[in-house]
Every structure is written in structure tokens, then in C-alpha cells.
Image 1 (cartoon, rainbow, N blue to C red):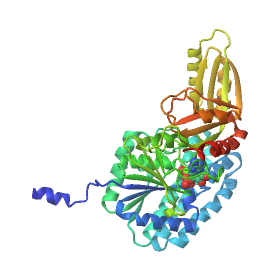
Image 2: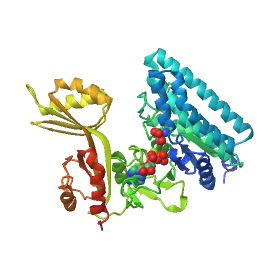
Image 3: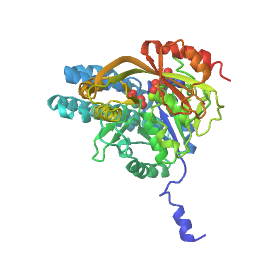
Image 4: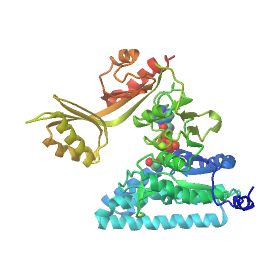
Length: 470
Ligand code: ADP
Ligand code: ASP
Ligand code: MG
């Protein structure tokens, strides 16, 4: 071997192993015992180069968002009242699980975060235009504090570990509250930031859910977005696996809180997991699979409260036979927008205008259908829809049906997009549902129904189709 090459290879300047991404959700870091449990799980993975992504402790993000609202509607005092118990939760973990300099550093950071939040609340009230970026900056403290604290806890027994600011890795656009990553920049910065840490034998710990614009303004990726952070970082680092650690041992055939008989799906495809996530399975953020699918990086879902309980593995091939129904899920909070023709009307032009108006107001559209008789859009309900509604009267006569839910049945339906599974068709005659066609997915069928009937429909479909599936 060339001696120069040999001596160069001794320098740990480049990192070429495939790391394991370990993401811990809010329920996995909800209190002192949970932090200790998670630190033990991470230390065990040390030989496989873990990169840790952590959410804010359960309830913290809700409290931060509520505090921003209270600061705007009442005053900073009311906002702080909501936050103090959560600051106390962080302090208690630090007091019990860290010591010496790292305890002191964390308490200083917590204090500085509180000061900065007070400043942000006051600026928002004085200058309403600053609310969207400052809201994201305030909310991001939930994850930033969690990452700093977890790194300190892991280090406590001498395990080499370092908190890394996720905003140095994930670059996004400036759609505050629902920012979209800029892929090329994210890859470059993630590698530049994390490779040296990994090459030095340290475990990096990053906050999930947060990023920054090219100008450095803090952004967030949408509720539940830490899963998405984990797979973005996993794809950028070409991870061997992304592990999502939560409070259930995998993806189940239905939400186990709604259907106690639900069972774990040991193997799922990227497509099946995406449809479950899109249509209501809260266990995964809807965009989680996007970054890793093309690179075929496996994603597993594991239980931090019971690491030996088994897990689900998401890959490109699950080996499920055609005709098998795997899971049922529903997504509440939807609305149907119907538009009837008025005046000179062309379905294609009206559809274009409907899509443009909904998009301009930031309304999330799940399904669009058009005919000469009119248009229907299935959308996420909320303030954005109410604002868009006023601008839609130019398109035609508008009628909105609220309190709808999407019902999604996931399985292997084969290749015929229009074909309903025969038993599925039979069971559904008991409910008032509208099939959303065409929905050209080989692994799911989608329906719209009254929100109040959806939990009952999920239980019935699970009992008759999933539990009876081959
Ligand atoms: P985390 O805080 O770890 O991100 P989440 O609360 O976001 O956890 O997601 C986990 C929860 O997702 C579970 O407690 C479970 O109730 C819910 N869930 C909904 N649908 C499913 C499903 N099909 N399989 C597993 N969990 C599900
Ligand atoms: N903490 C954020 C939320 O509650 C992100 C996450 O949990 O993934 O939405
Ligand atoms: Mg989650």
C-alpha cells in the first residue's frame, strides 16, 4: 500500500460508516424515568454510530403554542403561567440525572430560553407581522432544550455525546409552522455538521421538528415533524436504519387506543406506511417515508418503554399477498367543498381556479374531482378554509360540508385502481360513505364519511376484514 495513503487513512477526517438514526418522540422523554430509559437504549447502540433525534417532552409543544396565543390575546404573565410547569419538568430531569458543569450549563440555557421567550412575546404584541417567525422560534425551544438535556444525561456516565443544533443541518423555505426542507442544502449541511462529530466518536443529539431558512430564521416542520427530521437526516447520512422510538411497539392494524384487538404489522412497505400516516395513523408524520424510500433505507417503529417487545419494519417489499387487508385508519377534521356550476362554466377551468384559490390560502387538499355537474374537493378543515371560502364564490355556487373524516383501508389490492375489494364493498353498505375515486393506489382505498361515524366504522371494518383476513 502507498505509505502516504496509509498514513492519511489513519486520520478520522472523513466518516464513511452508515449510522443508525434513533428518534425519540415526546412520550419517550416525558419525565425523569423516561430520559434515563432512553439514555440507556442509546448507549447500547453506541457501536453502530447512533445519531439521536429527540422531540420536546409530551405536552411541551402544545403549551408553547398556547403560550404564544395567550401572549397575543392577554399578556406575557398569562403565557408564562402556562410554561412554568414545563420549565420545572426540564429542571427536575437535569437535577436528577446530570451534575457538575453540565447541570450548570443546562440551567443557564433554560434561563436564557425563558428570557428570549419573554422578549419574543413582547415583540409579537408590538409588531404583529413578526408573529409567524417568532412563534416558530419560541416553539423550537421545546426541542432545543430536550436535545441539550438528553445529551447531558447521556454524557453523565462518560459516554461521548454532543448536542448539535438541528438548525445547522435542516434548511427549509420560510413557510413558518409548516416549512418544507430544501433537500440539496440539507444534505450538504447535515454531512458537514455531523460527519466530524461522528468521526470523533461522539453521539450527536439533535432536536427534531425544527430547521432554519437560508437566512438563519428558525422554522418548524409541522406537528409531529420530528419523524420527518429523523428520515431527512437518515437520508442525508445514508443511514443503515432509521429507528422511530415511541410508546407503541410498531405500527398496528388500527390505532390501538381505538381498537384494542389491533395487532402489530411486522413488515410493511413504504407505500403502505405512507398511506397509513397520511390518513390518520398518528404514529408517523405523513412525510416520514419520502426521504428514505428512494434510498431503500429501512425504518423501524419501536417501543422505548419495552425495547424487547418487537417492532415493525418498513422496507420496499413486505411480501403481503394480493387480497389481504392489513389495516384501517381514519383522519378526522376534514371538510368537503362542493361547487355547482354558475354562469358560463368549464369544468377544467373551474377546477384550476378552485385548486389555485385553496392553495393560495394554504388549505391542504387531499382529493379533487370534477365533472360537468360540478366539483368536489376534500380538504383539511380550519381557519384557512373559512378564509378561502369567501374567494371561491367566483368559481360557482359553494357548499361546504364540515365534520367529515377520511377512512382509509390499507392492504394489497392489486393493480386495478377502480376495483373495490369484494368484502370491503359488502361491509361498507352499512355506512354512509363516499368512495374517493379515482385513487390509483395499489395499497389503499379511501372514503369520506361523517366524523362521528368514523371510529365505529374503523372498529367494524377491523373486526370483519382485518381479523378475518388470510
Ligand atoms: P411520539 O410522541 O413518539 O411521536 P405519537 O403520539 O406521535 O408518539 O404517536 C404514537 C401514537 O400513535 C400511539 O400512542 C398510538 O395511539 C397512535 N397511533 C395511531 N394509529 C396507530 C397505528 N396504526 N399503529 C400504532 N400507533 C398508532
Ligand atoms: N414536538 C412536536 C409536536 O408536538 C414535534 C413532534 O412531536 O414530532 O408536534
Ligand atoms: Mg409523533
